[in-house]
Length: 456
Image 1 (cartoon, rainbow, N blue to C red):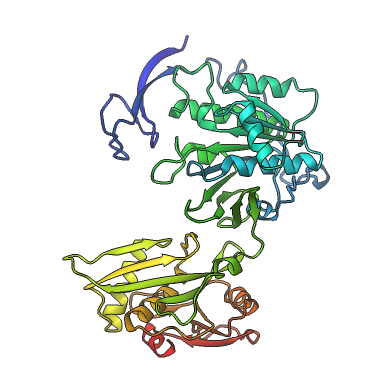
Image 2 (cartoon, one colour):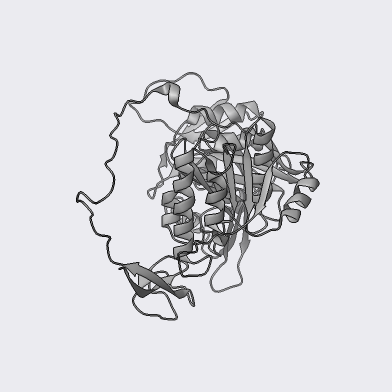
């Protein structure tokens, strides 16, 4: 007989302790520790003749003809993020802020697949069936033959799928935090319930070859709520980002076992739902004003897609003892480093100035190639001189002021030339690098941040 015991688990980070406390020692969250009942004791016969079944050992090289094709949704932006479509038997976790459009996106994906002949099931644990129907009617998808269910019991969902007369191709769980397993003595949303529910659904999906999409809630820090092991269980983790003040939504891949990571898909929130944006660079630069000090264009790269965005900087005298550093869409620590390099290596004093930095369009930039564009915007804002017309910037700045090369400069330059830019300020290539084809626009190569002031 297995013995029951108590343990205390943090609902924020999943840390386990032997006693309750008001504050989690691992993540510092208050009032996040809850009591859970666990079963201890190992079953008899492990490793013996009365134990489990013998595994079927297979060779590494399989037969390609037995591999099922991907499920193509015909939503180019979604297919790009997933690596070319959904893989049969895979599990994907989609997280995002409340009201950002996760349920809307998945309902559109499900309806697209149904129209192509796939069997899809949408299970909602947060809304009634009539509420899902109202959303579908608003999106113009009311006639799509999608099977709906409002349920939170994992046992009921598994039983329904196993006894279904038709094989299901896609299953949507909205959301995993509302699911529960009746053999676990804890409330839905706790660490144990989320982990156990995901394990049972993924086990069933792998066995029957059903692609499963989980919707995951996020914490106030932007991380997916629940245990970190949830992200390890699934095959892909997608984050749906965006600012409610902007109509753009970014679907970003942070993990994908079947495709590239850091890939993004761009959508626009409209009355008819989420509309794909085929050329996000043109959309991000649509409202850019030329001949304005403090504005520079970054030729960035998100996954395999080049993206051109506007970097805006404002420098103003500070009346405070500690000048403000306000950043939107970029790393605050990275800004502090660039400011220190400009002051130490270039003699530009900004320590007594308020600095405001914004990546226009609501997109978040994480790659270090944005350093050069940020430095150009800061220099332009500090001197009051606009940057050179129709020019783009990319490059990483080192602590000694050197400009370091970044990946795939040819793709960035090609995208900039396609949008009508005529000049690019980029890092000088290493001396032993191979000669490349002539770039499609005028290129100014610099080795130190000091040379940047002559090009603004």
